[in-house]
Image (cartoon, rainbow, N blue to C red; front, side, top):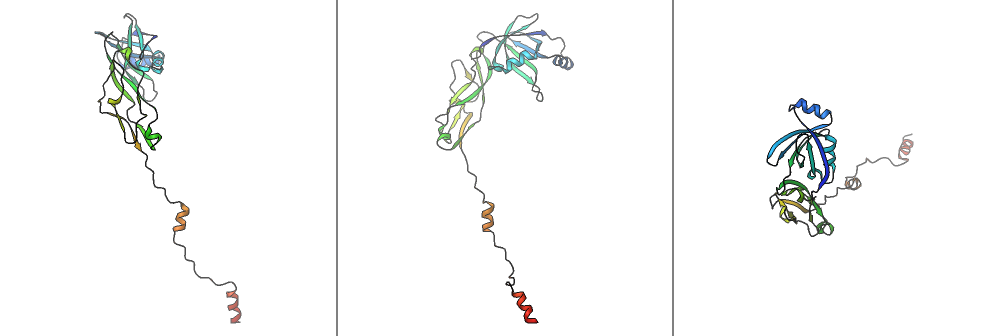
Length: 226
């Protein structure tokens, strides 16, 4: 479950809104953030990159519940709802947080884990293929599971698992279509073995060599001419 950790992130109100202001903040180790929800006005601020990066690297990642303190604004429990990452430097560029309100459900993305060894792999020489690796859900923040797990032990060759086969905890709603395929066991096709170079040489037509003179034949002919 997504448990509230004793994490407090301090931030300052952001006055500038232009790209130059954002670049200047990032050079100073800060990240532009927006906090919204809860029926109150959205707040834009600047938070320390190191604090947000530590949360994203934690076990609960973006589903971590933490407290955001912005000067002049009441401290609020929040979670990541969106983030922008630099594709080259893998650095956080911007983040959106949602205020958490008791009794209000939110949407989240959690990993999908396959557990057990498939009978199709173990006894039928098949290969397990996981097609879906994360699932969109809706529930109260503290009910967000660390991951959803599906046992594939009885999955044989050509068998298929769907979203509808995922066991879900009470209070958790899966938002993906029930007929979405999440895993299957396929047959491993054996490629025909190519003939070896040695076999190729054995099958090749023998080279025709012209008939030569027997040993000593040339010398005998010379003697007769004398």
